[in-house]
Image (cartoon, rainbow, N blue to C red; front, side):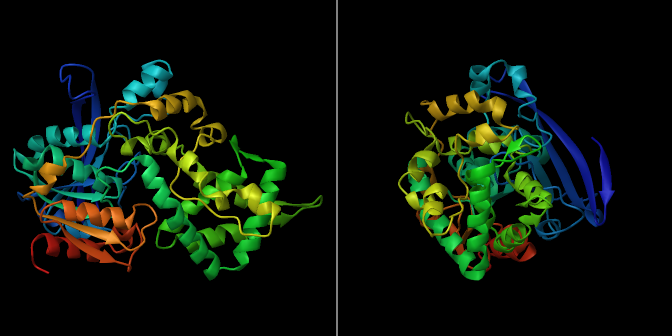
Length: 431
C-alpha cells in the first residue's frame, strides 16, 4: 500500500482482487482500486469507514485535492474509501483499447454484463471486511452511486451502517422506455429555462446547428453533427451548466479571410464536452443500468425520442423554432461519430438487445428495511425523475428525504459540506 499526503489529508492506494463473475468466485479475477482518505490529524485513529460511490455509470471516483468539497466534512469523522467502480479509473479499465483483450463484440458484451450495480455491490461486500474487520460501513452514493446504494439495501443490508443518497433514487421497476418518456419533458423545461435566461442563444444555436448540418466538420477524428451539438444539453442538469453552455455558444463563430467559420475554440470545446473517451462505460451501459428481466432496452432513448418531434434539429431548422438540446440520452449515432466509441458499436448493439438482465431491486426487502437511510431529492432533477425518486423513497422503510430546489443534480459537489451535514442529521434523527 502506497501512502502520500495532500494538504490536511493522508491518501493511500488500495487495490483489491475480486471475481469478474461473483457467481463463479474461483473464475477470472479483476482488480478494483480505491483511494483511502483520512484527515492528517486523525491518521493513526480507529475511525468508522465511509465508501463513496460515484455517479455514472462509467466514472471513476472524483479526484479530490486536499479536503475540498464534501470530503473535508466527511473526514471529520470517517476514514473514506473513494472507490473506482469496476471498469472505471484504475479498476481494470474497460474501453476501446482494453476490451479487444476479451475477444470480439460478443465476448466484450458478455464481459460488460458484469459491470452493473449488482456486481459493484458484491465488490463492496468483498472489500468491506478487509478494511473494517467485518463492521458495517456508511455508504454515500451520488446519482448512479445512489442506484448502487439501493441495490446494496436490496442485496446486502447487513453490510450497511447507514446510507446517504444524493440525486440517486431509481425507479424500482421502470423500463428504460419509461425513464426516457419522463426525461424528455424535463429536458425540454431545462432548455426553455436556458433560453429564457439567455435569449440570444436561440439564434446562436440555430446558426451552429445549421452550419454543422451543412459542413459536418471533424475535430481530432470526432465528427461534429447537429445531434452531437444538441447533446451538449447534458450541461443543463448541473448548477452552473446553463452558464457554461452560454459561454461555449458565444465563442462559436470567427471571421476568416474566406468566410465565417466555426472557431477552433468552439470545435475543441464541443469535441471535449461530447467525447466519451474518458468514460466509455457511460455510453455502453447507460441504458443497461435500467435492464431488469427479459425485455431488452433496445436503444430506448432513440426510440422514445420519436414521440417528441420537437427535438428533431432538422425539423426545427426548416421552421423558425428553437433547436432543443438533449440531455442524458445515449443514441446509436454516438458510436458512429465518437472515435472512442466507434470500435465498440457492435458491442453496444449486443448489450441493447440483451434479454436476460437480473432483477436489481427487492421490493419486499426494501419495505422491511432497517438500515437508516437519507436521500437528497432535487426538485425537477434533469437526470433522475423526481416523481420516481419519491415513489422509491416511500417504498423503502424508514427512508427520510430532503427535497430541495436549492441545488441541481450535482448538489453534493456544489453544496459540499452543507449537503452532507443535512443528510447525516436526517439519517441520525438529529434534524
